[in-house]
Length: 126
Image (cartoon, helix red, strand yellow):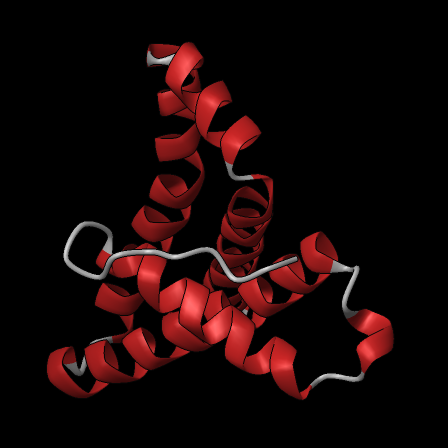
């Protein structure tokens, strides 16, 4: 898969994801070159988890209340899954179009959602 050109000004988040994905992919052994969806999902899980962990650390240091962090984790978990599901219900045509046009980004997004959810569930469970 060739690296698609993404303009930072138009799509900053997609640009950052694109750059990170191909930077990591460049250092992997050649035998993994064809596993784009698997890599995107795996990188997404790690990224989602690490961003959620960083957010939890920041909130813990600022709020100082475990209850606030737990409420935030509950709300974040609900939002993580309800927003894409809501998008699927409200605008199914555009949702499907995005998934069809960007299968690797879509898979990566699912990975991010899974990683962030794992961290939120961890916060709520322990």
